[in-house]
Image: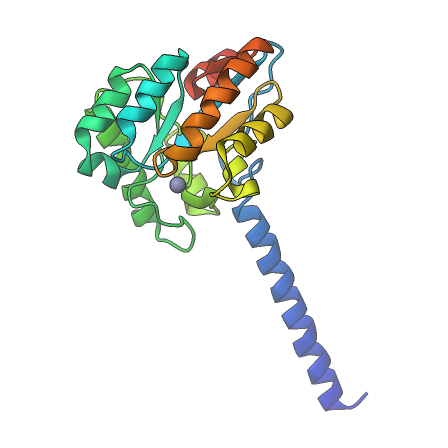
Length: 239
Ligand SMILES: [Zn+2]
């Protein structure tokens, strides 16, 4: 084998290894069931047909209609709020807390928590936890990474602070598209729900589809014996 050929082979091998490493890191960063440090939860299996609705982002101007819908359906959900949203709409954050629904941390600025400094991640987590506490929330605060992305520093810092990462097991809007109708979202949830499912929805941005979907999902799943719990309730009872 000539020297040039050997060199080309070495370069190709290097590219292959590099590409494999990047692929592994990419899959790791979006895994719903594994992270390098601390605990991650994507469902809370149980035998009591208990499930959780989780709403990401906000608060937005839709907070009140979401809370009204939950109260009308007589269920509680978990709101993963962003620090910037709480700062912009502190009264809405207080309303969520006062309504007895649970609140989780969805970062301060809703930035991908990858390739960011340790200091940046620490600030995103701490600032938002403090804003959530200032809204009157006293229960355990869980963390949901923006875009579900996490790799090294975020899980490491969360584990240091004993904060559990909460992902999800169902995301109808991602599977069906954000323009899916209420009926399509409802059908997807009803057909795929399992004991301990954690369902992710975005009524803060998508209330016209999500809230009418809840009108179908909640009575149907209640009829099937399911109970809607918050993440702190599910976690404390079954983890
Ligand atoms: Zn989000």
